[in-house]
Image 1 (tube, rainbow, N blue to C red):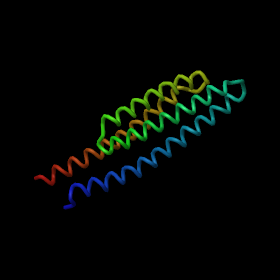
Image 2 (cartoon, rainbow, N blue to C red):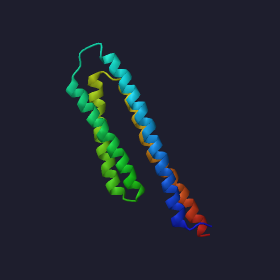
Image 3 (tube, rainbow, N blue to C red):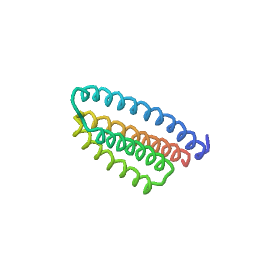
Image 4 (cartoon, one colour):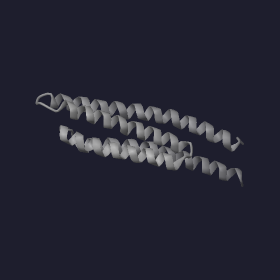
Length: 139
């Protein structure tokens, strides 16, 4: 039987690698969607400052989501919750700005929900695996 600490450490490393791949995948999907939407916007004038604001808000959303998730993996739930709340605020503002720019906000909602549930759901799976492993060691 593997000691509990080593088992958890290896699982966390695997989860981090998987979540990095998830972040890259969703970032690429979001970038492709935004690029496609911008080609439609090119056919009419749009506000460049508003577009820059949208990208900054998306960057803050991604940063808050990834940092909050990493902090939660360290077991600091309060601080992780603060980062996730900041990410949520940035996502809501980006959603509003995206609607003003003419993006399909339903697509933005679906991408955001899948991304958040993918990251936090994988944390829940890791926690469950570690709990079951630890519980079986105590029997």
